[in-house]
Image (cartoon, rainbow, N blue to C red; front, side):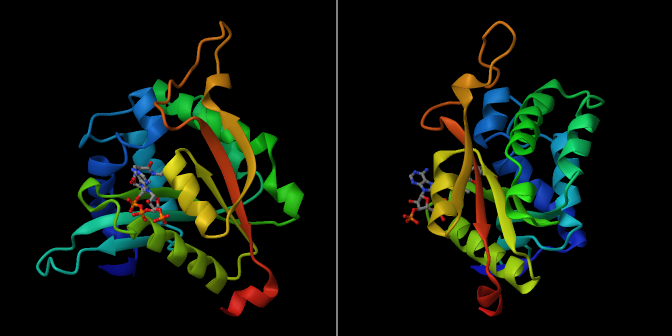
Length: 223
Ligand code: ACO
């Protein structure tokens, strides 16, 4: 396996990987019925494309496939600044994809309520946004390696704080094994509408959203 930085020119191949492996499979997308496996989701693709522009994302490529760039895993990382989440939440009202709105309303409101910027007194964060591995390549440590490399990219670029919204128990375990700690949690059973109906019926074993963080002290930055 080879690990490479994702450049904007890889965007279409990254989207193709995500359409086949992330858009339908990620626990919240699945609960919302966001899209079918292989189909496109313009709202989520715009979110992913924005992260790629920050040039801090990493892909796993099957080195055995010599003639094509066979992307088998990606981690999309972005820079988050104070005010970005409130802006994204206000823009959500204009989004015509109701399923996308359900997911990002939960994520944005949770992040605004549990404010890492204020708690850690930072003015930017390294935001691990999307972690995805090809279903045929799972269980081989690829996600672990992508998170490890993301931490290295964050350190190299001088970030003091990393953050991830992990939506399932496996991604939560992966982040914790790389030194991330839980800052806040939201049980899916308590994300309900005005009639008490659960908005995102997420399948077991995934029961809650975890907002995780990893603080990097100055001494760690040269590692
Ligand atoms: N069942 C049991 N354990 C699992 C599973 C599973 N289905 N998936 C991962 N794990 C455990 C592994 O045992 C391993 O533990 P270890 O380090 O103690 O050995 C650890 O998680 C890491 O395993 P990897 O092989 O590195 O994970 P993998 O490459 O299979 O990718 C991922 C895991 C990214 C969750 C993959 O299943 C996937 O793409 N799922 C769909 C998309 C998704 O849910 N992404 C995360 C959403 S949160 C976010 O994007 C920020």
